[in-house]
Amino acid sequence: HVGLPDRDRIAHMYSAIRNPVPMSFVWEPTDSVIRRFAWLEIPMPAKKQLVEASCEKNEVRLKITKVESLNLYLDERLVDFGKPVVVRVNGSQVVNRMLTPSLLTLCRTLEERGDHKLAFSVKGPLHLK
Image 1 (cartoon, helix red, strand yellow):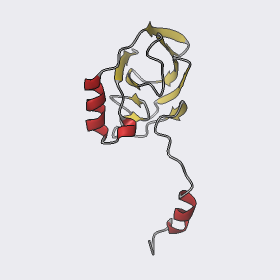
Image 2 (tube, helix red, strand yellow):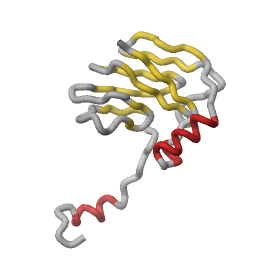
Image 3 (tube, one colour):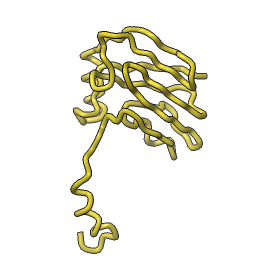
């Protein structure tokens, strides 16, 4: 790593722990290339969009700005499929129902991402416009 401007930071990075499924995060897309972050996907990401997301006790809360649609990716790390899942967008309840995991969805998300920690068994589209 000689000559790299960040080569001295590598030792510091060894202690970092990856969390592919955070229970809360803020995502501000900066271009149209990166469509997925953690357990959300914005099919048409753009500048000036913002998502504040959290998931706790089978309730997904999203505070969004300038996002017309998104996909939620869920699995047992985030929700208990034995109970209804509630989704609130900007304070309004948009979903309150039981969700059924799908092996096909699990396989598709694994194939798409190539990372078993980013594979999910439920994909839920939300149209927000």
